[in-house]
Figure: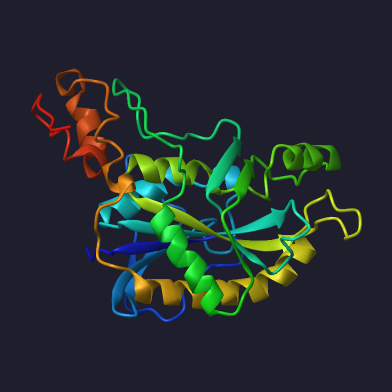
Length: 295
């Protein structure tokens, strides 16, 4: 099975990655079920890249149906060290206009009932999540967006709702009062799971609308989103190609050692079944058949 150094998870409207060569299509079995779709692995700008359409080919999965644990586990199994998430979002600020790009640095979780951890089943882990996105990867995404000529907002708070309905006007005003800048449905639990898997993760958010708070603009609709997405997705693809060219070799990063001080359960109390299922994630800390770990 071919590996990959970086992965792109494509959101609404972003269903394939242009420019890949030496392409393989992989379907990876995971302890958490099937991935959203086949993972396409190929070479882009000399770097092995994995591409996964978050909602499946043909956009078949609701945000709450996306098998995020399977997706992140499979990408980790492939050796992915960085994940670029591409997501359509609404704006909660006048200055963040449709067709702008945002690389957020904070999250507010308003999802409900989505499995958001690999752990449990006798293994207790508490990751640090004060910086939910990788700052180094985010900086590269800002630069890649600017290179396309797009307006890019560096930083900001992304609020993630359950969906699939859009917000009421009252909800949108509350979210604005909390300091949220954009609103979407998919950055969580992906960001939490990527951190647990010790993979760098950042979002390139494509602004499609002003959500429902701005009375001077038409209310958000699928028609509006699709129209703006087509232009935004082309910009995102060009930005990602720039980022892949600029990626440094893997170095020191807090993301890649997130579990080093987060595992609370002693290895001898963790079943081999759990160790086996989570081997791509915890294998360097807990080995099957042993009670030792090198945290």
